[in-house]
Image (cartoon, rainbow, N blue to C red; front, side, top):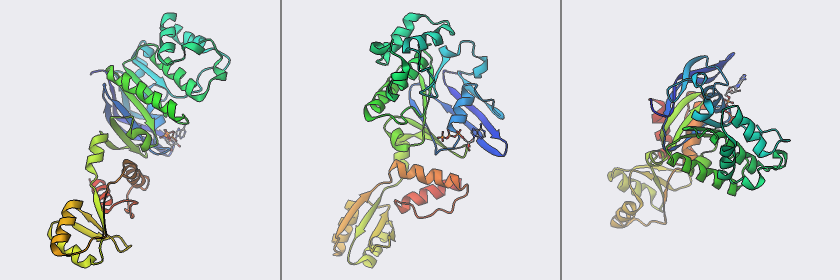
Length: 322
Ligand SMILES: Nc1ncnc2c1ncn2[C@@H]1O[C@H](COP(=O)(O)OP(=O)(O)OP(=O)(O)O)[C@@H](O)[C@H]1O
């Protein structure tokens, strides 16, 4: 297989808890993939199995076609940042990386190069204990890049970072992907992911809910239009004849799906029905994600009124029936 991550029916149970449940998917090179799910969904457990830190109950996780424990020089194939505080606070950044490098047969020149790459060259000999969270994250990434690996894994890399730190991580991951690497990062926040990743793997309760691109996710969830009119019954008749699905929203307004705002305006004008407001709306990715994962949390869903549109609820419940 190519240089990528492959999960095959990966499963991890802790006593009665199934943390990861027959997860099968591929993470491709050349793009940034987000591994997304609410707290407790199984992201960390999955990443730890990819890195050979936990043994799967069944199934397997392959990196470039091999299980981690079969990889002879792991740092050269997969770099990981699981915990920003992995470095000893009393050591300097350089010493920390030099120890890591030595155990993998990597020279000191490479240590200096990665420190430069992450912007820590100026503080290479300062104690890690005095580093900010952003600096510790950079150091973690420097460690992950030491062996120039084709696969890079990061667990919640932007957690707690300020805006500049998040921007830096984002552009760093993009350039790593552009170099042809496989980049997987976990998060529980869709808002973070939407601007950073190309593809998303969404999990809930250890199960794969979605494996798609951000673009596809945006496109799939239909838009709707909020319409305010003093003659809702008549307008509903007109729009229904145009093929729209119209539902009252409870505040006296109508929600129309399957027809866009200009068509609604034209049809209303043609019928002589006044329009007081016409608002196209789209479900945000955050809404879509919350809807998806909340139904996973309940396993089988009674789909309750979504915070956004009727179209969104329809799409999400259709998916559950698959
Ligand atoms: N060592 C363990 N022993 C027992 N249960 C565990 C253990 N590790 C994880 N779990 C359980 O497995 C499930 C998945 O946990 P995991 O930490 O992988 O989720 P996560 O998606 O990474 O969540 P978070 O975003 O909170 O880190 C949870 O229900 C958790 O309680």
